[in-house]
Amino acid sequence: MLKYFEKLGTYALDYINEAGRMGIFLFHSAVSIVKPPYKIFPVLKQTYIIGTLSIFVILFTGAFTGMVLGLQGYHTLSKFGAEGLLGSAVSLSLIRELGPVLAALMVTGRAGSAMCAEIGVMRISEQIDALECMAIDPHKYIVAPKFIAGIISLPLLTAIFDVIGIFGGYLIGVGLLGANEGMYFSSIYKDVEFSDVYMGFVKSLCFGMLIIWICSSKGFFVHLSRDGGYGAEGVSRVTTDAVVLSSVSILVFDYFLTSVLL
Amino acid sequence: MNENIIIQLEDVRKSYGRQEVLKGINLSIVEGKTTLIVGASGQGKSQIIKHILGLVKPDSGKVLVYGKEINKVSKRELKEIRTNFGVLFQNAALFDSMTVYDNVALPLRERTKKSEDEIARIVSEKLALMDIEGSDDKYPAQLSGGMRKRVGLARALVLNPKIIFFDEPTTGLDVAKSNEIYRVFSRTQARLGYTSVIVSHDVPKIFKLADYVALLHNGAIQDCLTPEKFQLSDDPVIKEFVETTMGPLYSSEMEV
Ligand SMILES: Nc1ncnc2c1ncn2[C@@H]1O[C@H](COP(=O)(O)OP(=O)(O)OP(=O)(O)O)[C@@H](O)[C@H]1O
Ligand SMILES: [Mg+2]
Image (tube, rainbow over all chains, first blue to last red; front, side, top):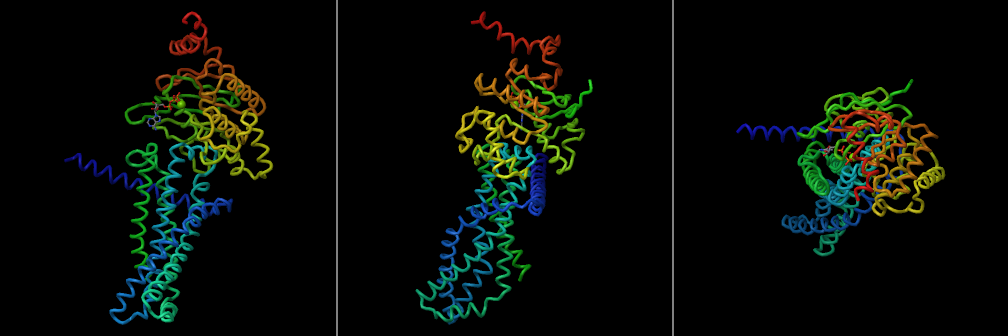
C-alpha cells in the first residue's frame, strides 16, 4: 500500500520538477531573445523552416477546411433559409477559431516535432554541452531564433489559412451549391469585425510561442526525462511527448484564450 | 616555487545510483603547466573533466576554478569563466549538421567580431595545423574517427584559450599523426603558455608532454607527481600502473 503512495509521490514530484524546468527554460529563452547581439540570419533560416516550408500544408488543409465549412454551413443554413449568411459563418469560424487552432496543429506536426528531435539529438550527443563549454549560450544560439521565427510565422500562416479557407468555402458554397456570390462576400464584409481578427491574431501568437516552448524544451531536457533519455529511443519518446503535449495544450489554451478574449 | 593553482578540486564526490564514481578527489592544476590524468578505463577521468567544466554537479566537495566554485557561480560568471576554456570531448561532440569549416568557425563567429575573411584565415590555419586541409566542406559523419578528433582539436584551439581540456586527444590516431599532434601541443603551449589538462591512455609517450601526472584509481587521485618521480614512485598502485603500462613495452620481445 505504502508503495503505491510512494510511486504516486515520485510521479507528482517528477511532474512538478519538469514544470519548473520548463518554466526556467522559458525565462532563459525570453531573456536571451531580448539580449544583444541580434543576429538576423539564424532567424531567417528558422522562419524558412517553420514558416515557408509549412505553407504548402497550410494551403492544403486551409482549402479543405474552408470547403467542408462551405458544405456543412450551406446545408445547415439553408434549413433556416439563411444561405446569405454563409460567408460570415465560414469566415468567422475560420478567423476566430479554426484558423489559429488548425494552423498551430499543423505546425506542431511539421516543425515542432522536427525541432524537438533536432535539439534532443544535440543534447544526447553532447553538442549542447560543447556549446556551453565554448561560452556560447544554447538558449541564445539554438532556442531564441526558433522562438522569434515561431512568433513571426504562426500569425502569417494563420492568415494564409483563413484566406484560403474563405475561398474554399466560396468555391463550394457559391460555385458548387449555388449560394449568392455577392451575399457571400458582403456578409463577410458586414460581420467580420476588427475584434475577430484581433482574437485570431492573439491566438496564433500565443500558439506559436506555446509550440516552440514545449517542443524545444522537451528536446532540450531529453537527458532528464522520466524513463531516462537514452539514445534514439529517448529522443523518439520525447518527440512523441512533445507533439502530444503541444497539441493538447493548444486546444486547452484555446478554450481559456477564447473565454478571456470574448 | 611560486606556482599559481588555478583549478582545485577538494574532496569531490559523485555517485550514480549505487555506483560511487568519484570518492573524494583532491587535485590541483597549476597555471601554465600540463597535467595529465591517467587511469584505467571507466575510472572516472572524463567525469573529473566534466566536473571542472561545470557540466556535472558534485554530490559533495568543491570545484574551484580561478578561486570560484564553478557550480555555485551565477550564469554570467560561469560564462565568463568558460571563455577561457578550450575543450575536446572524448567523443569530439562536433556539430553534426555543420561542415568542418563551420564547426571550427563557430566559436569565432559567436564570440568575436572578426570579419569572415579573418575567420577564414584563422580556420584554415588551425585546420592546417591539425593536418586536415581539404575536408572543409565535409560533415562530421563523413569523417574518419581520427579526423573527427582533429577537427575537435582545431575547434578547441581556435580561440587561443587559456586552459585546455583534452579528453583522449590522440585515441584512434596513428603513431605518426599523434606524434605530430604532440609536437603541435608543445609548440602552441610554448607560444601561448596555456594551462592544459589532458586525459590520455597513450602512456608513456604522452609523459614527454606532461609536467604533472595524476593517477586515478578507485575513485581517488593516488598522487600527482612529475613524470620522472611518477615512474620511480614507491606507491604500490602507481608502481603497478607503471609496470603494466610500460613494462610490457620493453619486455614484449620476450613475451612473443
Ligand atoms: N551519466 C551517467 N550515469 C551513470 N553512470 C555514469 C554516468 N556517467 C559516467 N558514469 C559512470 O562513471 C564511471 C566513469 O566514467 P568516465 O566516463 O569518467 O570513465 P573514464 O575514466 O573516462 O573511462 P575511459 O578511459 O574509458 O574514457 C563509469 O563507470 C560510468 O559508467
Ligand atoms: Mg573517458
